[in-house]
Length: 220
Image (cartoon, rainbow, N blue to C red; front, side, top):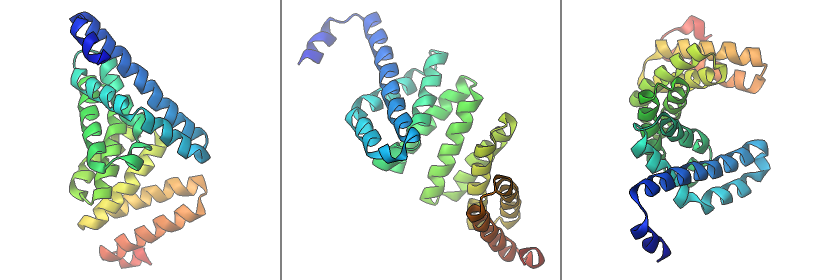
C-alpha cells in the first residue's frame, strides 16, 4: 500500500534515481553474500540465507540494469557485475535456464560497453551452464571466445577452465583433434600447479580423446 501511494507521487526523475540507487544497493548485498562464501566455505548457509532474503530485490536490480545498460556505462558494468557475483550462489537456488538469461543480457551489455573482462566472465559462465545442460555445440562457441579473451587478458585460471570445459564438449561432439589440443594445454597448466589429482583427471580425458581420435600411440 505504501509503495503504491508513493509511486503515484514520485516524479519521473526521482523514479529513475530511486531505481538506480536500489539496483546498486542490492548489488552490494549480493556481493556481500558472495564475499562471505568465498572467504569461508563453511559460511555457505549464511551466505545463501543472505542471498535468499533479498532475492526479489537482487533480481529486480539485475533486470533494471539489463533494461538500462545502453544508457550508461556504469549501468552496463553493473549488469555484468550482477552475473559475476551470482556465478556461484545463483545455480544453488535457481534453474540453469534463469542463470543463462542473466548472463545473456550481461554479455550484450558488456559488448555494448566494450568491457572485455566482463565479456570474458559472461562467456565463460554461459559455456559452463550450457555444458551442464548438454548443449555442447553452443557451449563450444562461447568457450572458444572465453579462452581467447582469457589468453589476451592473461587470466590463466579462466583460460585453463575454458580449455578444460571446451575439451570435454569437443570430446562429446566428436571433435577429437580439438579435444586433444585443449587437454594437452590444460595438462601443462595443471603440472605447473602441482595438483596430482587434477593431473590424473586430465590425463584420463586426454587418453580418451586420443583413443577415440585414433591417436593410439599418443594415447598410450
